[in-house]
Length: 172
Length: 104
Image 1 (cartoon, each protein chain N blue to C red):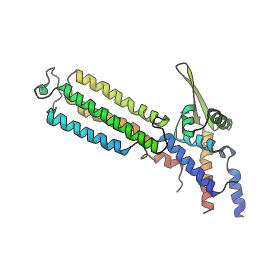
Image 2: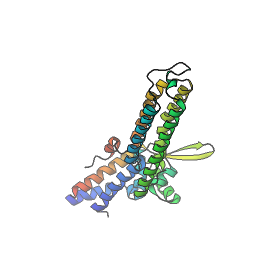
Image 3: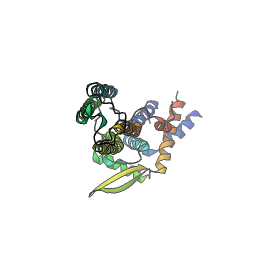
Image 4: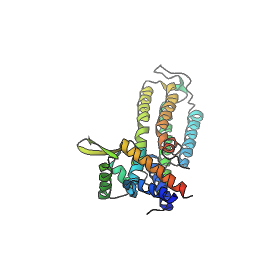
């Protein structure tokens, strides 16, 4: 017959399995901080070096700011920021996953990335269209909107969202 | 008298939840609407045969249901928790809670 220790272990096991199957435990805080630093560096370069400061939604094929910046350089900077942020995120998450004995590429991370990909890919396509149409002024605010939607989708895979779990075990 | 109450709790503990693996399957399905075989295998870290046996046992109890579909031509079986399963799992948690509290 089981004793109290066993029941406590059962509860711990249940909690652990709920967490493992629904949370991306390997998410690294450092990756987020580094991504922010890269973004600020990219912003500094775009604003100070290339003088990128679109304050109008531009319909003309001849861009108003074309005398002070070239779009190719801005886009290259943005792509470099994206690649470094992704590489850092993957590296830190991989390291953390190894530490806690998880695999970084598991069913939960696959689900989380699928959820994030929907708004990100939608936004990405829209922004490529905007670039091709020279509507430069709309790009920055729209990236933020779609990024926010992606995070909203991913939120339920992070540890902060415990409301649902809370419903399942109202144990102290 | 206290003992008899406790004994009743023990009898209430469902046989289906005695196995760690079955408890694990139910826990994972409690927080996920649908999970396929491979995801469950990854979470529980058990062999195919072992997992299949436990899934069959839970299915027999009508605690979990099966949803069959195809990805291209490959069959893809997904599992979900039935209402019966949800109730049983919740009751099990409540009993565990009571058992732990009664022994404090």
